[in-house]
Amino acid sequence: MPAYHSQIKEFRQQVGNMAILPLRTQVRGPAPTANTESDIIDESLYFFKANVFFRTYEIKSEVDRVLIYVTLYITECLKRLNRCTSKAQGQQEMYSLAISKFDIPGDAGFPLNAVYAKPQSAQDADLMRQYLLQIRHETGNRMVEKVFSTEDGKPNKWWTCFAKKKFMEKSLAGPGQ
Image 1: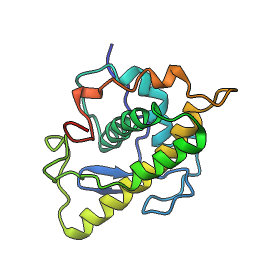
Image 2: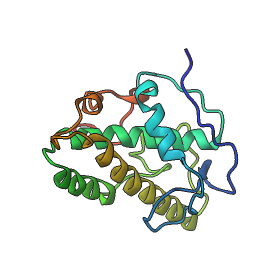
Image 3: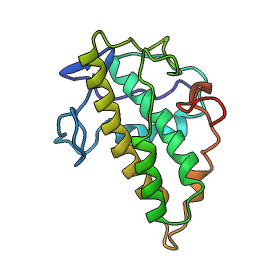
Image 4: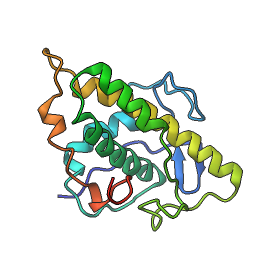
């Protein structure tokens, strides 16, 4: 069975070889506001539980590179949310994770430099960092809503059980983190 790919085919802008896609978000950033019911983050959340088991992933478009990044970031979110006992604590953890220093394609610590192109200029690098920051904030917000959707306010075990899985045997966190 092959991995699931994004259903989004059209995009207006790209940086490096990553598409800049519209997002349903209130977080400020370079991504345009989406007028649709679902965006790349919704797709990533929907396909996460199936895709996380794959060790390889065939990239079919620039949109798939965004899907890969969001999937890897969801795994990092789950690692942090696994330690949280309340929704408020989860929101704080997701905010601190989103704003923490992170590598972009082309940086030495980025785990998938082989499949992501380095931004062409410092301006492109800044745009990519802002776009990924916007994605990180919105993904974290949606993860808190998914994980703490139970009546008792405890983390949902059907989400937290995926905290130890590694998509494509990669992690956005550095070794030992």
